[in-house]
Length: 119
Image (cartoon, rainbow, N blue to C red):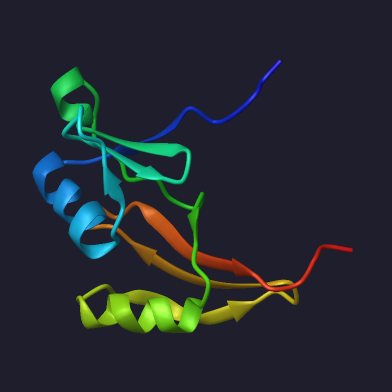
């Protein structure tokens, strides 16, 4: 029934600030037709402000969106140079490396690289 992931909704208290973070800091490709949509491969990140729709803002926690990078340590270092704070050290699961951080609204994100096939 389900064929693919259409988009990921990212809650924000300030869409302009979030846009700047996702485009300028993380390097996501902005959608030329929508100010608050960005692309990672075929997946759309859609920034929305819950307060504008009558909802209370709450950051997305403990469901880290995994952003693929070729080298987690190098990507982490680059983002730290741009002021991104990471939580803990790079985690090695035995098949992948992960580095956890948040966006300016506290939404959980992760740099991720699978280096070995799953058995």
